[in-house]
Image 1 (tube, rainbow, N blue to C red):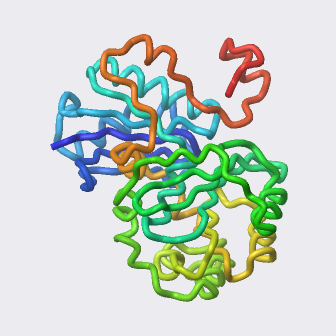
Image 2: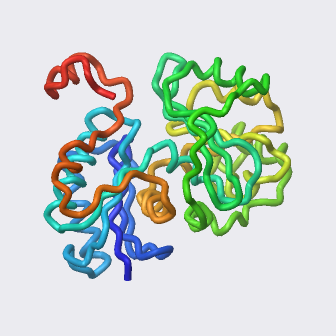
Length: 301
């Protein structure tokens, strides 16, 4: 058994999981806003109790390294570093944007746009595509006006940036049943994402599972939380784009574990104190007061 403890504090929902390879032994994701500093350790204890395994059985730790909530990312990365050191196991940090991209399974053609809302019409974004069983990044992580990114992609002017491939495989498929949702038309899927699905919201998770992934759709927008520019995406791409619903793209710790297993992340070897000390999260637009309180001056990445 290769037991991995994974947790995500980079967004409002808190998500924790114990994963053995492709099998989820236990998982819990909050459905409401929580104080991660207070909730993380009780959630982890409940997770081990539910799975019936000892903490010392953990063989690796995976954490969402951001971008995301400034305070949330700091809490998660700090806890992961402390646990990795105490247990003597490797630590892997996975990009929150890369983990979002895994909501689209391997084998699906087209670009995958991962978005985390940065407010005021901006998002932290990256663009990926599947090349066989490898997830290739076509646009490096960065803050961009969503309207500008829509126009860039609609005009076909996206140039490959940071196109190093990540070794990835069935991790994405493990979450959605190997792409069983494939088959419906892109137009039907886009209609569901527009609010014509189960709950009349941005889209229902069930609707996305039924019809999101089709070979006809050249671009998939995976946003968490919902970005207000969904209408602009639909106007620019129509049925050629699929908006994966925020409810499905929400932080899920099991996805982090799969991402790390297939090479999507930066690993710190067990016992490497220097590397653990140097490991830094990726912050999402931290305010100057927050950076000052953290003793980072103008820093924050």
